[in-house]
Length: 221
Image (cartoon, rainbow, N blue to C red; front, side, top):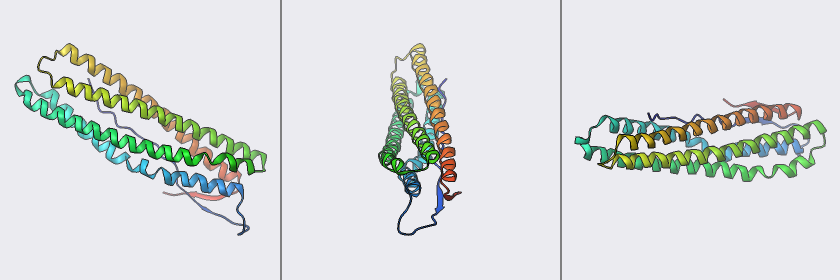
């Protein structure tokens, strides 16, 4: 049976920092810190989509539960609720697109990291910066997979709602589509876990890099 599955997204750590030393020139490490915190700012749109997306998922689950409790004698009501669910699914799609655009903006900004890494002189710090880059690239790739699987699942949801609007729909046919939706959301949860793991690893490595570089930072609550 179809179940609502809410995305649980791990977000980037927000860091505040204090720069000491020469006022006329910042080090490559400090420039990298600035870049990485700009990345967090670029993902603010992404962060803002989490609450409305969860609400839309919850609303759609309510509509779905109402639909499956109705009998064919209430077919007009089934059609009405199915149309509402389709509208809701389309709104989820738009919210997810905005989230994706935010991540892509972040990814574009992150490309500046290569030129900064080249300027880092300390070998261990440079090594950690390269590891940080690798982890972030893994995170970007994971979000792309999450986006693709989530968008595919939305389309499968819409297919189920369209099936509800068929008066000659058989239970066997409906169950087939519901099974496809469940399999699709299993993939969403799998890619979501991969994305969250990548984000956690990146957050930890970022703090390690800041300590290695001798940068005074703290995590904002």
